[in-house]
Image 1 (cartoon, rainbow, N blue to C red):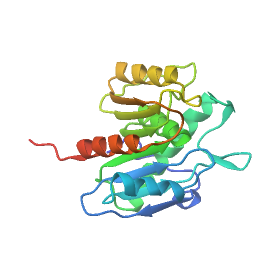
Image 2: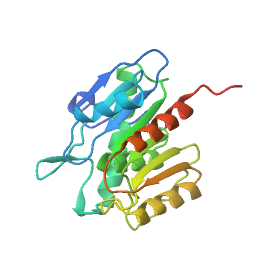
Image 3: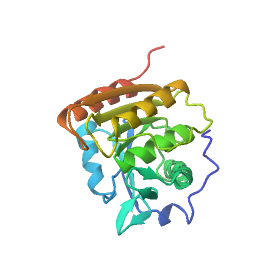
Length: 221
């Protein structure tokens, strides 16, 4: 049973704006997490590029910054409210547990796919609550815990980090810190750095497709 099975999202699942699209039998479910200013609708386009067989579970970030949807508060550009990161990661873990039951996907492989702010909440949730989600494709994500290093075990967690090496919003030094932090706590981390800045390019999509195919392939006995 998931370590988060006893968690319930505040107000119930219906109080959290989201969409769910069933996939083919045996296919994974992609938890798509939008960036700042995005929503649960537009981010689902990523799923079709990565695995058209997959189901999609797509919630909306419930923090507003000047009317823009976000997953957690920040103090200023690049400086996160870490207490809020930790709180919101717990809320997302509770949402995932409830959605798995509601949509009958308890046994389906679930992989978080996030961009920017969505990548950061995916990373925080996987590291803090691996019982809810333990695989993440992070497009333009970074270390989500500021100046803290939570006491965690990330054994069994698998992360794919896809970043531009000149990204001012997710600096390479922060990505390197994330890689070191997660690896030291038992996570399997694959990192791809490309020339350029914040965003997703075709090489990122190809790398994500390959990684997803490998991580969801049946494991032989």
